[in-house]
Image 1 (spheres, rainbow, N blue to C red):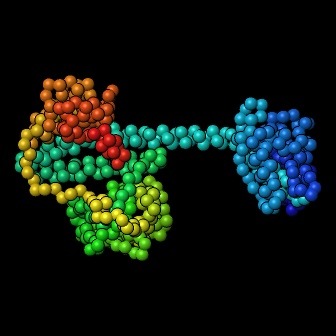
Image 2 (image 1 turned 180 degrees about the vertical axis):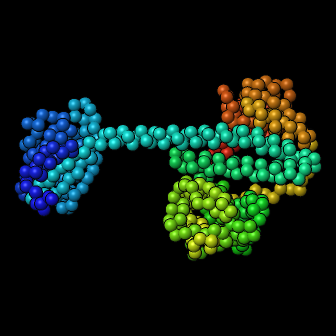
Image 3 (image 1 turned 90 degrees about the vertical axis):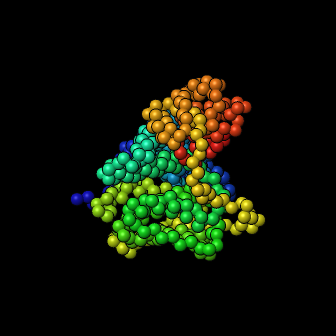
Length: 485
C-alpha cells in the first residue's frame, strides 16, 4: 500500500521523465514596477525536446528568448495574468523550433512570490487528427448531398410512372389501386426524407440560406396544414386548426417556417393512432408569436424529451411497431426556428399521454410596413380549365425520366420534343419555338442555368416560360433558377 506522503525524489523523477514538458519560471522585476518578464529556472527533458534547443543553454534565459516571436508575447501575457489572478490558466500556441511547426497547449500554474510553473503538451497530432476528422466529415456531407440528389432523379422517374398509371385508374382492379396508393405514399416519404438529408447536410456545412420577409404566421401554418392534410387523411388522424381572426405578423423566411411547422405536424401524425386528434393553433403572447401542435399520440418519457431536438438519431417504435424515424425533422425544426430568433419546445405528461410542441418567433412591429409588404402563400388555384395543346421542349440527360414525363404530358394532349444536352436544345430551337421549356439543372457540359441564360438571349424565346427540373430543390437552388431566368 502506498504511503500518504511520497518522497520528494519520487515526484522529481516523475516530472523529469514525464512525456509533457515542465518549466519553472521566476519573475524578473524592475522595482517598483510590476513583473517585466520571467526567467527559466529549470526544465525537464521533454521541454528541451519540445522547444528544440540544447538543454544546457535554456536555464537562465528569458521567456521571449525561449519562446520567440508571437508565442513569447503570448506566454508572457499568460504568465502575468496567472500571477495577478492567482488562478491557473491554459492556452494554445504555435511554435516553430528548427523549422518544424508545432501546436502546444500551455498550462500555467501560480507557485507563489511571482513564480509560475509551465506544462507544455504537444498537440500537433491532435490537431492533425481533428483536421482529418473534419475533412472526413465534410466529405460525408458532400456525399450525402450528392447521394440525395442522385436518388431524387430515379425517384422522379418512379413518380412520373405512377402518375401515368394513375391516369388509367378506370382499368385498375381494387388490388392494383391499393398497390398504386401505397407506392405513391412511400415514394413521397422517400422524397421528403431526401429533402431532410439535404437540409441536414447544408446545415452542417453552413450552406443553408434564409430569405426573411414580413409574413402572417397563421397563413404559413395553414399552408403547412394543407400540405400535410392528405397524410392525415390516409392515417385516419383528425387535423384541427385554430387560427386567430387578426394576422400574426413575424419577420421570417416563409418557406422555412412552413417547413418547420410541417415537420411538427408530420411528427404528430406519425405518433398518433387511428382516430386520434391533432390540434394546430396559432396565437400571440406578449412579444412572441406561437405555433402549438398538440397530439394524443404515444407521448414521450422524460429522458426522451431531453435530447429530442439534438440531432439525427433513431427513435423508438411508435404505434403498431411503426418506426418513428431518424428525428431529422425535429432537428431541422429547431435549427430553422432558432436561426430566425425563435425557439421550439416539447412537453409530454408521459408515454401514451400525447405531446405538445410549441414553436415561437418574435412578433414583428409592422410600423410603416403596410399591407403591400406582407408576404403571402400560394394563391388558391383557379377552377380547372384544360389548357390547349402545348409544344414542350424537355432538356434532360435522364432518358428514363424523360420517357415517363413524355408519356404523362402526351396523355394530357401536349406535343413533346426531347433534347439530351444543352447543345441539342440550342439546335432544336433553331427550327421551331416551343411554348414551354423544361430544363434539367444538372446537365453535363453546359449546365441548365447557363442554357436558360443563352435561350433567353434569343428574341423568339425571351418570353417563353422555362421550368427547372432538378434534384436540387432547396430554397437557394430555387433562387439560382429564378436568377437564371
